[in-house]
Image 1 (cartoon, protein in one colour):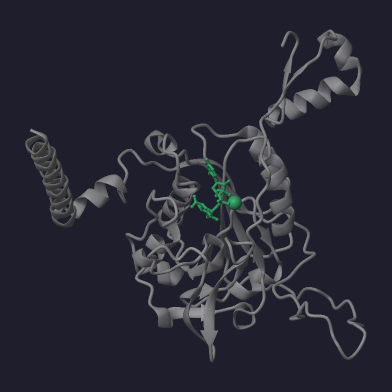
Image 2 (image 1 turned 180 degrees about the horizontal axis):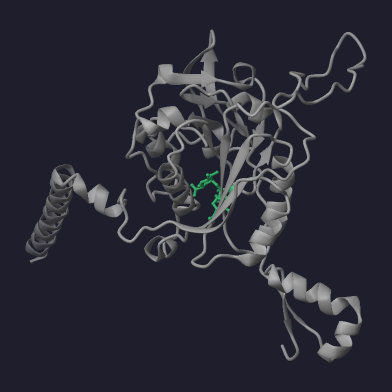
Length: 359
Ligand code: UGA
Ligand code: MN
């Protein structure tokens, strides 16, 4: 009796294991023979109804010419032999208007820190001549508040409305900034921009002014270290004898090009050779797939920033917090007699807080 029951249990276990093994085999067969177009369906390169919404644009440079093309090539390493007595050299050389234009693409999205980030970045870009700033906002409608801030810098710019498709926004690991960068690529193509250089500069990163003179004359693709990335605190190409041989990045994750979005620039001549180049909505693989889509080869990469020994861009991240609702029990008219009326309304228009009379 006992042995026959044990036999049944054993047999049931055997069947169970066989079943599990069978399911694994099925999954494996399915996985390896599945249509490569499935990837295309999941991460389509051409989106239906993808359209280019240009909100505002200016091609005029209203900045005063405080700046010029190249910064003096001073390294930030302290001198060990003598006191640092660098004369403050004239930072800039005159601009003659023939230098390649840098198309600086900034994805941004409405949240309470947005305007503060844009001011910080805009004031960096004010120092960079021959730059066109493409600000691609992750919204369905054009933000007038954002525009009022962008246009006051006097930088030639284009403001786009480029919302993330809803199906991606619902994901836990949403591909941030992709719809924005795709829209910018679209703008570059539609406007037949075939000279100059493309750079993806997120709204929360920190950019050394020297970066711009480094990338301006990119022939194909230039690469350089990005500080404050991942577990190593840096993501950088590995360079020997002036050539890129590999990558130092704490998240290689089977990527052919384990680099950060801020760690490369592409010349528009080179980009134009790949008319279908794009970025998929695949979080973590945007850089890799984009660089694959332009057919990049290791020997095409030009290391910058003193052969990748200097850090000219930092992956800073702003701590984000929810907008509070502030209850003001004072009558609006009375509030308007104080500075507080105008001040609070301004903050509300930027999404920094909400004013309520009851909550
Ligand atoms: C890192 C990389 O630096 C990004 O280039 C990359 O797109 C992102 O990971 C990713 O793989 O998703 P990280 O600092 O983690 O960026 O992300 P955020 O700074 O939050 O977003 C990247 C850019 O997308 C920013 O310019 C941000 O303003 C924009 N963004 C973010 C949107 O447009 N929509 C969003 O919902 C969130
Ligand atoms: Mn960021």
